[in-house]
Image (tube, one colour):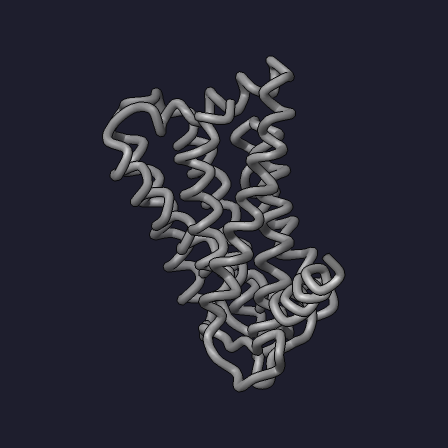
Length: 236
């Protein structure tokens, strides 16, 4: 047991705490980046609010969510350069891409949320809130919904852990980008969605700090969101 705990500790240190060599730090660089990020945030929050008010089954929902993904990506690239980032292993080996670490983090985070969903299922008003949000997933072909979810996950990380993170001063980039991501979901009117965004945003922001790029956060986000889409309705 002690060996397993030690191994988990080394993994978390390498994935979320100790910055990899060559990781690009944030620095709040440039008025242009901050201006583009601010405009994109406002437009994105409004577009998300509108998308989640479209009736389940209406094809306009897919168009709206893909438009939102396009907005995040365009805003991110318009704001300045982005980086994929690097990672180190828990044994301190040569830097690489944060692929395996992110797969593990995304799966672990998914497991924690699904355990929490068991508790949510016992509270009718919270449970119904989430089920209403998942109604869009129940309408239409599951693989289309899964693809749209993955595309949005990639786009959100490119913007929030790419552009928004880089626009913030280094000392507040981790909590700041997580809070901005959570605030962008407030208009949806689902408290648990905002809470989930805050937790996911904190984990992926720590990854961004450690790796200096968006690849790790993207993988973690897509694993988490895809798993929640497929498994959360079963738990609830």
